[in-house]
Length: 362
Image (cartoon, rainbow, N blue to C red; front, side, top):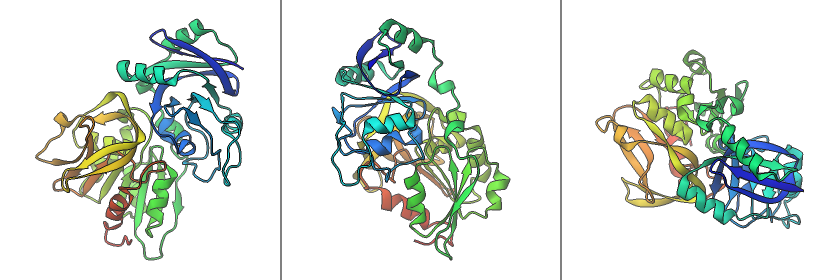
């Protein structure tokens, strides 16, 4: 099956189509992980993006369905050097070919992903058009250039839950409300296995409804797109700051920072992978973390009289963690729940959440 991917800078590459025929208009981003493709493709943070894997072979252990981070494939399309059509693993239920077909998604393989990765690192993430069923490169470039910027799209509204739902923990456990901006399942699992009663609410939930659940803590989840689109989330943090402990992960970290008066910016090509080094400034140690974000907090905009930068990325010095000096608020840019990725910070972060709010027990 013919396929082509075109970029807004005029580049186009022809390859072999996988999945279903169609045209995908999104931003092309890359991830450096070589396992965990099942988790990555179902991560709601990839909504609005065509996901390219730098590792040359994807799909060799198949798709099990056991590690999905949402109900479906969230990435808009897939770009790989080679996709394995004969997976070998005892948990495999289907190949990545069948997975794309079942999800109604398009992909391209047999292309120079290294060249596209280098181009992205040099010029930044670009708008792209993926066409499966045709290989008209000029048309792909035209479509890529004509689409709106990803920052202008309301991607949160496409991935947040439609109705609140609850997962019971221990009978005497505390209550944590998770604002769902595109929450990964493992965030909920990490909270729930510590005995917490978890209530997940839509991103548009007002403060009065959140407080009706009598939460001992509030956690803002990960999610896709520009954090400035999370207008209600920013408002909620402003209103509840000082009223109860507040935590954030990834997009939630950026939303909290905006609510506290800081600024965010779009990174050149973001952090996406399972090997991002983060230095804990208090302990003087480095954690290896899983990350997936295209926006970051501007350190120069942080009021250091009120907020402490607790963690920094050792590669580019971007802000990876903050704590408020007087209010019970802390957040991290990386994914402590991992999946995919290392579990260096899972216990540290979620034990901290579990230790807050009086009734919450580990």
